[in-house]
Each structure stands twice: as structure tokens, then as C-alpha cells.
Length: 251
Image 1: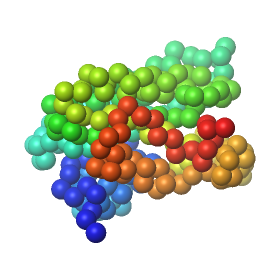
Image 2: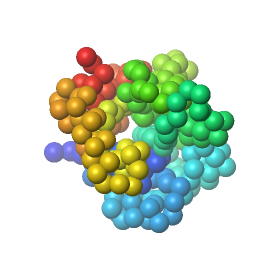
Image 3: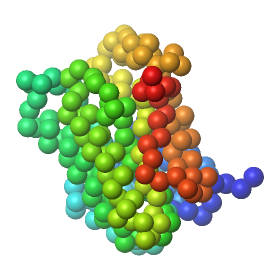
Image 4: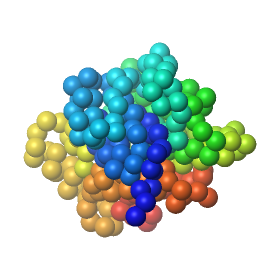
């Protein structure tokens, strides 16, 4: 059976852990040459080793325009083009209205909005016509979560980007879609509960109770959906939001 991304060049930002790493591994397994980014050198080296010989690591913070320039200069020099861009880097934290700080706002919007915008915009000269761009959304953007409004708003902006960018890029047939995971067992999610293992399991159990399928997702389940959006299987899918959430936001 032919591999779905044979000969393609993919860029995955925030590819050192969780969904980003699982997706980079799946892209590589399906034949892509994968460039992955991360902010920490040790984690980046470990991710490249886990992905395999088709992976190249570039240390970069997606909220830094200079880092993005360096990333794309490397991709241009070594691969010359981008067929698939997964703008996955991001994150957030809990603070209720009344306690939100400028620092938290700037960090969250810097990573999830500014970072995504310039990750895509600066990639345009390298993106081939007909390329696939995937943005990481969140179920938080389509529902309410106490103390999570800044993160939710940032991910709502990501959804708006996709709806508008497909019009800006229609002449180039570049597809832009949003991949929206529900609760997924990743270091980023369990870390929200702090370092205590019992609290982490308690958080996962609570989140599982809110999901119609009765469990949290695994990173590779989201990666398989990313592969669909990246591949020709999704050739007529653009501007969409694909929920991989066990039904959480569908009821």
C-alpha cells in the first residue's frame, strides 16, 4: 500500500511532545520528510530520535519572528518547499476573570494567535500550490470552562483564521483546516494539574467523565486525524474544523 505522504515535506511546530510529536512520527511513517520545532534543545533532540531518520529538528519559539525566519531559511536550504504545515505550537494556563494578568494574556495570545499567524504567513513563499495547512484548535473555543477564558479566546481566533485564510489563499488552492482535540493524554494536559500523580489522574478521570465515549483521547488518535487533513484523502476539505473529542462538544 502506498504511503500517504510519500515524498512530501512537512513542518510541525511544537513537535517535541504530545500531539505534535505523535503527528510528526505518523507523518514520517507515511513517507514525509519532517521538520519539527521545539523551544528546548534536549527535548528536541529526543523527539528527532523518536521520529527517526526522516526528521530534522530546529530549535524555535513560534512567537519569535526571528526564530521563524531561521526555521524557514533552514527548510528552504534543505528541502526547498513545504507540502504540509502543522501549526501546532501553543499553550495556555488557568486564571479566572479578576485575576488575569497582562503577562498571561501576552503569553497565551503570543503563542496561540501571533505565533500561528506568522508561522503560516512566513511559510507562504515555501508552501506549494495545493498545500495543506493544519491549525491546532481546542474544544475550549466552543464551550465554557471556568478560569480558561484567555486560552479559549485565543483558540477562537485560530478558528477565525482558517475561515478567512481559505479566501486569501484560494488562487493557490492551499487548504487550511483546524484540528480540534478534546481531552487528550499529553504532558501538557496532565501538567495543568501540577506535579502530583494522583492529581493528574484525578484530572484525567474528571475529563473522561465529560466525554460521551467515556475516556480521554490518545495523542496518536489525534495524529491520525491530522494525517487525514494532510493527505489527498482530504482534497476537498478546507475551512473545516475537525473535532477529535470523543463527542464532548457534539452534545
